[in-house]
Amino acid sequence: MMQPDADGARDVLARAREVLRRVFGYEDFRGQQAGVIAELIRGGDALVLMPTGGGKSLCYQIPALVREGVGIVVSPLIALMEDQVRSLLQLGVRAAYLNSTLELEEMREVEARLLAGELDLLYVAPERLLQPRTLDLLGRVRLALFAIDEAHCVSQWGHDFRPEYLQLSVLHQRFPSVPRVALTATADARTRQEIVERLALQTARVFSDSFDRPNIRYRVTVKDRAREQLWRFIDSEHPEDAGIIYCLSRKRVEETATWLSERGRVALPYHAGLPPEVRAEHQRRFLYEEGLIMVATIAFGMGIDKPNVRFVAHLDLPRSLEAYYQETGRAGRDGLPANAWLAYGLQDVITLRQMLESSEAGEQRKRLERHRLDAMLGFCELTTCRRQALLAHFGETLDQPCGNCDNCLESVPTWDATEAAQKALSTVYRTGQRFGVSYLIEVLHGVKSERVLALGHDRLSTFGIGLELEVAQWRSVFRQLVARGLLDVDAEGHGGLRLTEACRPVLRGEQRLLLRQERRQPRQKGKPRGAPSAFAAPADQALWEALREKRRELAREQGVPPYVIFNDATLREMVEYRPETLEQLRLLYGVGERKLALYGEEFLAVIRAHGG
Image (tube, rainbow, N blue to C red; front, side, top):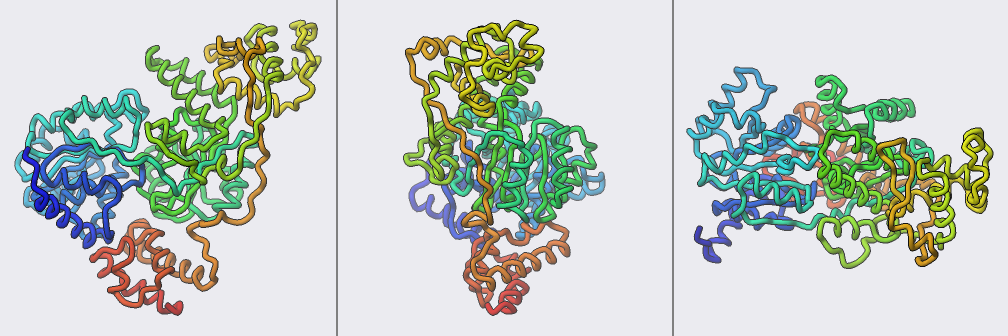
């Protein structure tokens, strides 16, 4: 394809920018958006790698509105396509979806609108798209582009794998002149390569944006009565905010949701074991209600567009940094401050490794997953900037420490643990390399328990040599020895610890070992500085609450989630700038022409009533 001259490129972007302002209410593009949009408008293919909340949707929505024909969006989740269509209709965009929730009459109506050229964007589930009837239907209309959202679903190495995605290369074979864009927030190199190969995107331009989410504060703490730790975090920093809490098991999800509800928060469980209608209702409530907490397994979250999720918490260790990044990225999509909070312990590692070893995955897959889990544990045990390490894992360099993670905000003290490590490693060896941490600490503390006496371990040279450290300190030592690769977990047995080759220099006294010194987590009072719902001036706080109430009222009337009316970032600008006219209101973030016409006067009335 011939590249357009400079004037042609400027014309393409001028048209795209006009749509951006008129329809979506934004002044300019972010990051790689302009390049992706220009490439698609010109008819080229693209692979887009952007963080969650990085504005991927605009990359295909705007070209679909600029180019002739209808944009076809392949989306793996019903909730995602319904949410996006709902938001687009609010903006005056002619959008619809085809999925299994539609009755026959509704499906025929959408198809008729498609054939009549009355749609700008059509969202389709991959299963529906691949049906001969749908492909024949698309062959009868003018197509602007194909957008393959959540393209990492093509990866057989990921937990979001969808077999139907493997067949989407048929789009290129059947419609070779229609531009295609694959989009994902999953950044590892293996997944990128699979997307290119399986979707036949070898000639596509690759656009990779920074994966940094500077508004998210990363915090990691060692488990010590984890639920109470979680409650202190939520109660002090997010007493009224929406959030997501991830747990490893369905049972833990149910128990945590019930426990939070008993403490006065609206919390709902979400996992694959619940009936589909219950899951759908809980997801609907999460989208429509403000301040609701969803407690979930990884079954929840992909494609959730709710922008004002203020925190994501993990009560158990995620399986990998890829999963952690994707799940924490569901916080703060509106760009306002958000928290990613994680509590973990050595038992999490043992549980995850046992689950992995008992799975039916092949040895190559297990080896990869072990490596990913090791990287996740290493991230938790860092004493340096967490954001630098997280971005480095995805091949990105952050020159300076971020200043917005726990290790940056409070330096982590270390201590010379060489002698303690030697005692711990020797105890593992002398007890036969088959016992867990609790038992090993009993031996180090010289506890003459029934089991210790029965096994004769009270006669070992390491019996009682560890009284200088408390139980919690020894647990920290053992956990960090596992994280450093000096000890391994016997995942095929009962989680016993065993030595690795890497421990020899420490045992022999040839290598000094510095470990992080655990700090006790103080109870934080009040909201963190910069919390999006906190205003210093009482008059500003009163206006903020009034604007949110107006948003809730309009959302109920329209039957849409409140953030579809205006998101928190837009309401904050109303508080800050207090516009007096529609023209002034139009200049604010996220106020397009249709929303200005629909809701402008009502929000201006609220501002005037509060002395705007």
